[in-house]
Structures are given as structure tokens and as C-alpha cells.
Image (cartoon, rainbow, N blue to C red; front, top):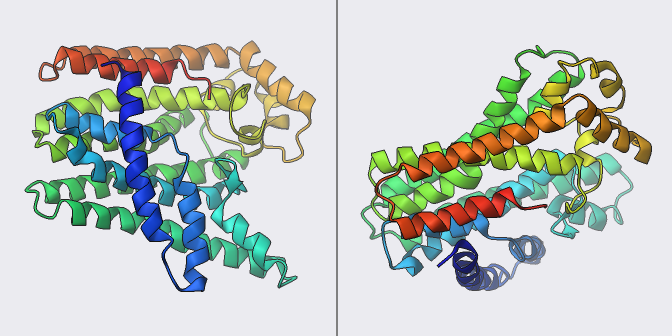
Length: 354
């Protein structure tokens, strides 16, 4: 079985689990709650479910009864929805997967009642924070309910919650760094180290290490096995985020607003590299502007290429993917046919355009 086949099969099974979960979620009778549970249910739909698939794959590396891990896959995806609700507030995003974000949907509803914009925005954000929290704790409940008789439950919950905590650490740095950068509070020689720390804490743990490792723990993995998967996942997760940042600047197929990363003053490897070149001054006159013009977006793209920042990021991305594959090759306890599925996953990430 190759990764594409594995992914499609597992994705369908997780979707069935998610449908059952969503059906129960929207049975809420209290109208003050029901509407927002329906918003949450909408955000649960139509996801790629890659992280849930990695939970299943982590379990499958040691066990054959893959369906046993599906509740854990569901929990990870519900956690993802919850943390993305918070992320949408932080990023001021109005849309998620083509649908209104929870804070924005509530703002639209209540601005018809109150002309006090600050009051309405606060209400929308507060409701969304509560719903994001709900998703995080619902994920814990799914795990506890599904695996209460499993001897590995304690280890799974501990690792899962550590993944959440590690992700939040990365998000905190990601929130603070752009502000410090905008007001010249950063040492440009050291900023790449901070950005790589965001990639490691946030993307690597949240996207690769966390899901694969909790799946492994459900299967009874040893600490030494987890360490090797963590080493692999760290490299691949960093590569994935570098690639995401490149696609954010050159978004021919990205499902996001063109220029949004530029407006947000997003801290990336491209950004840290260009700050140490002769193109810095021209770059900083545009990067972070709210009222971006099309020609300014194009100029930022050109500056990254002229400064060598684009090539630097691409080379680092490929280096990380390649190092991850070397680590995978040297892991002795994973059967070769299952390694091929993981290799297919890495190739799936490396060749994506959105």
C-alpha cells in the first residue's frame, strides 16, 4: 500500500467518526449554545485530516488493527479545530476553509444589534475563545472515554497534553516576534534561531511529532522508538513550515489572501535572511503594510529572489526533508513496507502547492 492509498482509506474512516461526533454535537438544545456548536461542527467538516491519518499511521507502525486508533485520530482533529479557532482570532481571519470563522460569524450577527464595534468585537472574540477551549477539552474527553481500559491511557494523555503545551509555546513566540521585529527590538543576527524555534515547537510537534507519537504510544511504543520518530518529525515539520512560508509569499495555488503574510509582518526564514542583505531597507518599507498594492506584493517577491532569500529557504527546506528521510532510513524497527508509506507522506508534503 502506498501513502495515497493509505491516506484515502484512513481519511474516509476518520470522516465517518467525525460525522458521528458532529451529529451528537449539534443535538444541543440550548439555543445560546446550539448556534455556536453548529459553527464548530462546520469547521470540523472538509478538513484534510492529515494529522488524524498520522495518528493512525503511528499506531500502524507497531500494530495491524488500525481501526482501534480511530478515536485517537478523531480527538486529534477536534483538538486541531479548537486551536485553529484561537488562531483565527490571533490572525484576524474572517474565513477558514471558505467558511466564516466563529468570532467573525458572531460579530456579523451582533453588529445588527449593537452599533458599538468594540463591544461586538469583544463578544465575538469571547465566544470564539470559549469554543476553542471547548474543542481542546473535548479532545481530552474523547481520548479518556475511548481508551479508559487501555493500559497506555496515562502515557497517551500526558504526551497529547505536552504536545498542546509545546504548540502554545511556539504560538507565543510567533505572536510576540512580529511586534518586536516591527519596532526594531530584535537582533537581526539571531532572529533565524527564534524562527527555527517556532517551527520546531509549533509546526513540528503539532503537525508531525504529536500525532505520530500518540499513535505509537497507543500501540505500546518504547521511549527509544518515540525519540527516533521525534527526530524524524522535527526535520520534516521544519521543512513543511518553510515550504508553507514560501507558498505564502508565492501563493499561486494557496487558499489564502494574496499578500496576507506580508501584511501580517510574518516572521519566516525568508524574512530573517533578507534582513542581513543589502535589500533590507527597501524590503522594510513595504513588508508589514496594511494597504498593500499589487505592485508592492510583486516587489516583495522580487526582493526575496534578488537577495537570495528564496533560494536560501528552498535549499534549507530540501535539506530538512532529506535529513528526515535519512533518519527514517536508519530506524531499524519499522518494516520496510511501512517505511514506504512514510516516504510517500514526505513526498506528498514536498510536492504540494497549497
